[in-house]
Length: 319
Image 1: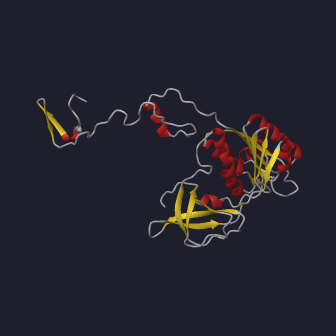
Image 2: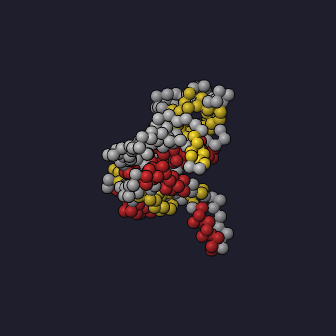
Image 3: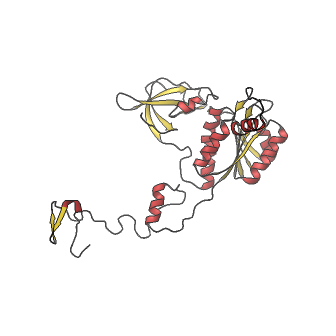
């Protein structure tokens, strides 16, 4: 700023002719002037430990001349699916085509859990080790445990966590370390098991897709944030208020997560319509849903017209 000047006129409101500048608009003292320290002061902390660096943070770090920034190492997560009843769409079908075989997989179920989990983990900055599918052999499951724990900070398994004869993953976990809990009071996702082996979290998720992915959000993502030292909500996703279009039933003693679809009401408030309150294997219900409504265990459902929090799972476009 020139000496004695205390305001700036935008060039759009001026014209110059023969060295004379005409100003078409008055300005107040300090207008269009950036003061020293206005953006950041000397000694001010601009990003604290535990922050997840966003795109605007990157620009700000450049603006303040930060050349080196200490960040946490990416958490290494092993992901393994179990079950004789599932197959890998990308691997098994490709091998069939390559060999010219007429083999079909009509008697099996495509593994959708592992790709979903891997995609989500990558989106939050994890280094993911995809260990594919292991069959229901006890020996194969033990080998999968050893392999996952050797390479990774967190081991995630899907399937074989319920009460069937082949659901032995909790027993295998106990062989290697400590089984902290088997069965949690949530719906869907009750067969989830949590344990620790050599100081590493081991999370066993249900095989049914909806139960698997909801339990993943509740337990795996918080474990990742904790290991990274990240100061974020354990269950990421924007929350919006909505009015229930109809009653949602639930059982006392169980925390229930209901899939809902949103639309704008006449008063411009969101209206949440439940898609399903059951059906742990109906993956399309998650795809159709905009978010989840969480019903606490001390409640026996929510009534039509109640205002609820909806945890978004996708962007609201055209709603």
